[in-house]
Amino acid sequence: METPNPLARSMTRTLKIRYLLTCAFVCLAQDKHAVPESSPEPAQLQLEWLIAPDALATLVNQRRWDEVLNAVLRGLAEKPGDPILHYWAGVARFHQRDFVQAVLSLRSAEKLGLDTAPFHEALGVTYYAIRHYLGRYYEHDVNDYLKAISYFDKALERDPGDFKSLHFRAFCLQMLGREAEARVGYEAAIRRIEAGGAAFGWPYQKMAELLLPTDPHAAMQYAQKAVKLEPEVEASHLVVAKINESQGDFDAAILECLEAARLKPNDPAIRYVLMRLYKKEGDSAAAAEQLKLHEKLRAVYVSKQ
Image (cartoon, rainbow, N blue to C red; front, side, top):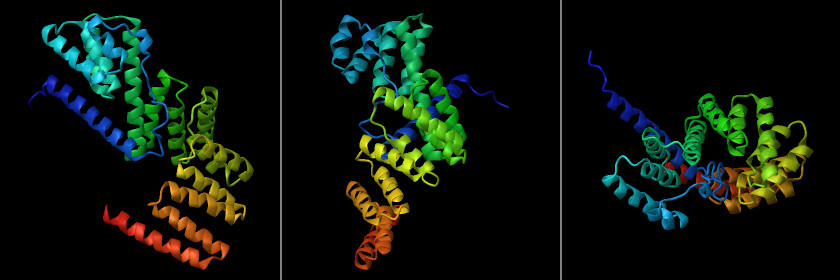
C-alpha cells in the first residue's frame, strides 16, 4: 500500500480547514440575525502593541492591509527567511479575515526564531478566531451542536469573556434540550454584555423564550431589552409579540409583528403570524390579506430552493 505523502496530507488538512471557514463566512453573511453587522468582531489584534518596519509603518497606520500584504510578499521574494516579514504577512492576513493563511504565516515566523509578546498575541488571537468561526459553522450550517460546543469551548479558553461564544454555546445547549445549562450560559453572556456595554441582544431574546412558559413578566423584560439593544432585529420583535399574545394583548402583538414585517418584508413566516393574530382579533379581512401575502412569499421562497 502506498504511503501518503506528508506534504499532501498537510495540504489536504489546510484545504479542509479553508473550506470550513469559507462555509462559515458564507453562513455568517447570510445569517445577519445571528451576528449583526454593527456588533464587534470576535477577535482583534491590539495594533498599539505592534511596531512595523519603516517601509510598512504608513500602510499599517492607515489600515491598508491589502497593500501591507503586497509589500510584505515582495519583501519575502527577496528575503524568504525574514521572520519579521512572515509575521507581518500573518497580521495583514488576519485583518483580511484569512485566518488559516494568517496562522501559516505566523508559524513560519515562529520557525524562523521570532519569539516576542506581540507575536504570541497575534498567533493566539488568530487561533481563537478560527475556533469561533468553526463553532458558528458547525452550529448554524451543519447543526452539529456538540462539535460546535467543542470549538466554542476552545475559543473561551482564549477569552472567557467572549460574550458571542458564550451565547452561541448556550444556544447549542438549548437545541440539545439542555435548557438549564443554556440559561446559565445566556446569563453569563448577558453579564459580559452589560459589563462592556455591547449592543448584542440575542442572549436576552433567548432568555425571554426560555422564561415565557413560567414567567412571562420576566420574559417580557428580557425581550424588550433585546429590542432596545438591537431594534433592527425582527426576531426580537416577534418574541415580544409572542409574549403579548400569550397575555391576550393581540393589538400589541400585531404592532410588534408589523414592525418585524417592516424590517423583513419578504419573510413569509411573519405574514403567517400576522394572519393568525388578525384571526384571533376577529379581523377576517386583514387575516385574509396576510394569508395571501404569506402564500405569495412562500411560493417565491420555494421556487428559489
